[in-house]
Amino acid sequence: MEIQPSLCNVEDTLSIINGKWKAIIVLHLLYGGTKRFSELKRLVPSITPKMLTSQLRELEEQQIIQRVVYPEIPPRVEYSITEYGHSLKQVLLMLHQWGATHLDHMGNKYQQG
Amino acid sequence: MEIQPSLCNVEDTLSIINGKWKAIIVLHLLYGGTKRFSELKRLVPSITPKMLTSQLRELEEQQIIQRVVYPEIPPRVEYSITEYGHSLKQVLLMLHQWGATHLDHMGNKYQQG
DNA sequence: CTGTATCCGTTTCGATACTG
DNA sequence: CAGTATCGAAACGGATACAG
Image 1 (spheres, helix red, strand yellow):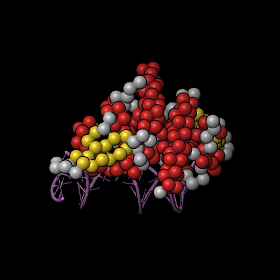
Image 2 (tube, rainbow over the protein chains, first blue to last red):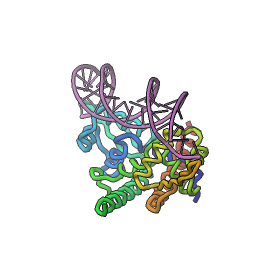
Image 3 (cartoon, rainbow over the protein chains, first blue to last red):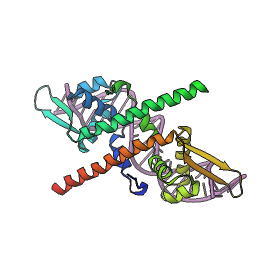
Image 4 (cartoon, chains in turn red, orange, yellow, cyan):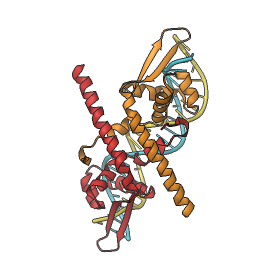
């Protein structure tokens, strides 16, 4: 299959995973299942609540994740990957594998240099 | 294969393709072969020379593309994908295909809504 | 517990003019 | 032809404090 650069959808996909924390959030939900806000915060310690909220909101709008509010005291909110969001798994896997190769490539370069 | 979110290489790959014009530049070189600076400029009309230069320089540093200067008057500079850079083809293809699916998904949503 | 609000530094990128 | 230089706007993201 050929890609027509001028009509390309690569940017659309990148716009979904772009955002400093989106990939790692999606990975945690993909591989760790449903998580609460505070669990995600614990899994990604250096993220601020502001950023966690904004990244989750964007992913929700993009229909990658689902947000469920339980009207309890104290409040409980659970985040999970949508069925549609699961289709990102292959994409992230490939990005991960290429990234690993890239580190090898750069590593070898510096070992040679 | 499992991805360990905390030790993930997804970000490394994204850092290569991130940059507003990198994907489209790489796609043009992948599918159109070696190009000169002015040819790329013509293929991506809305890019400024400043951005074209900076994106090309970064891709060169990442060893995705190769820059060859011919010491002629007027000057000629040719950009091409490195052998290593070709390994990005699969990645970009997958991003493209997922992006197309995503447009369908969103399109159907709006048609239904 | 699950967020908001505010402030502010950094990064990114566009517009424009200029150079060897 | 193939860039560089400079300015400035806008987006992004961190720190901190506060709220329901």
